[in-house]
Image 1 (cartoon, rainbow, N blue to C red):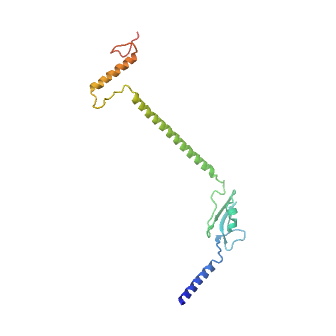
Image 2: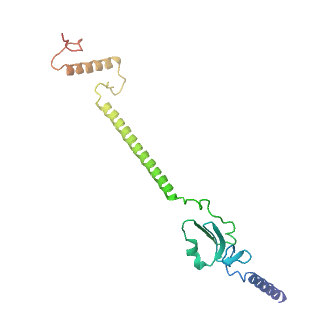
Image 3: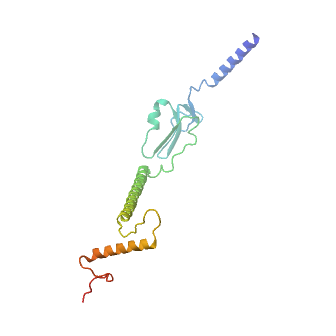
Length: 199
């Protein structure tokens, strides 16, 4: 019995000590505080959110309850910067962005130019690819059609290889056929391939 009572006393003492440490915490964050509102105690304050603001070169650090989160952290106007966070001392090293003093840079124009440039590049590449595809397809079909309709092409017999005599006979046949087709009704003879001579 004595050891279980001792264990109970030790656990109860540890629980009371931990709850005494966190008694004033209430889930609030400890924040760096430096402002003229009278909310700072020794350069710190407790709140649900820590903040840093910069308004026309006036800087403030502090804290506020969660009821003011939306109106404080989502406010935006020219020459105004706010940073909100939810960790202990998270606002200690906060500073305004380097462009806050000068002109506010409109990043939407830059994003628009980048998007338009990429769109133009993709469109140009697509059109060039389509033109090349159509051109090569047309050239391929033109070569195929020429092979199908070329009457001067020698026909190779099926089976064994043609002899020189077979090729020569085919050549003479094609030559004679073309000559008679060009000459019309008048025959100029076997050696006269140029037609009549004008005098």
